[in-house]
Figure 1 (tube, rainbow, N blue to C red):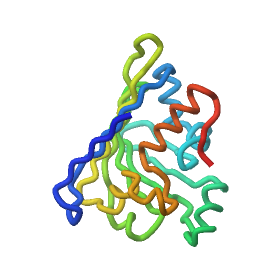
Figure 2 (figure 1 turned 90 degrees about the vertical axis):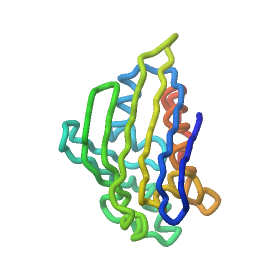
Figure 3 (figure 1 turned 180 degrees about the vertical axis):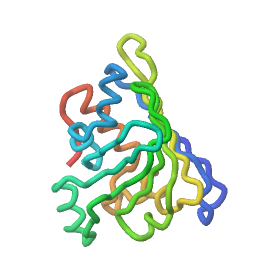
Length: 178
């Protein structure tokens, strides 16, 4: 997995995070794992992602009970919807572009909407690549969290961790998340 972060200064948090992971799975299996709540609740931060997969459709993530309990144990009472956004482009099972706003605390919610692109390649020898590009201009708190800067404080490893867990789940049937 590779990660690239470009930033001018921490104060402006102008940047893009790019992650690529290679997964022994079909494009459809990867697409389903990204877009179907019965899959998204099984890896990463374990939220139920609901997409209206058409341009202008909504995108929302609700925490699972396990995620909610873990956050509460750390003193963070989560709202019902922890992430929201809008579908900008959906080309199943190859490309998904959405806006993204994390609502789990006041600082990340104030960062506003950012943009995520998921691109799934056609398989070569049964292996696909999944590239996630997160445009984080003006979102310093979100960029730090999703870049894994607060992993040692219990905030998880960001996108690298989520994508690693997604790969593990699809290839082995078992996630390593919570």
